[in-house]
Amino acid sequence: MTLPNSLRLATLACAALVAAACADQKAPVADSAVATAAATASPTDTVKVQGGWSDSTTAESAYQAEYVNGKLVVIEEQMLFTDSATSSRAYYYNAEYAPTRLFEHRALKAASGNSTPTMLHSILNVYLSGYKVDSAVKTVDLAAKPVQPYDIDNLRKHEREIFARVPTTYDAPRTNR
Image (cartoon, rainbow, N blue to C red):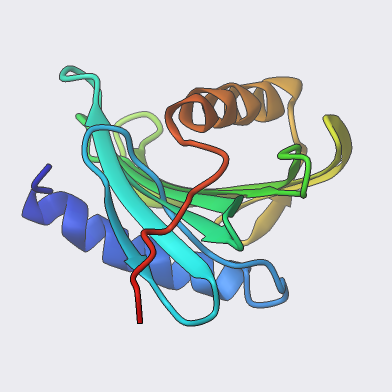
């Protein structure tokens, strides 16, 4: 899948915000997608598989799944919606493939009354033990906001959708040396 320039630019902008928000974490970073896959291996037994998907009406997605020693550890995804809103998400997994952290950064236009629309940035971090939520933190334009149940439900629903598109294990091609 060839990404349009608008999604590439949104991806670069969101990647900088994701990197800043994830700086305190030791988990690896990756994105994932369904339609096509390309893998790159490194000598550290880490493999990144890229892909993409689109529902052809409301959203286009590019993702990368990262595997360490053949096991899925993280999926990173960048989405572009038809209203020009963007979303960068990262889903981190333990050895049993249960989610341990879900992260989302959304950039969307909002306006009140007759005002000119402005770009808002929403960041949601959800920490889990197995499938139980331990804590969740949300900010909108750097101001703390209460996390609503639907915030977590929507992020978990999307995590399950993208997780179903990505294999949990990856056997890197072996070469005779």
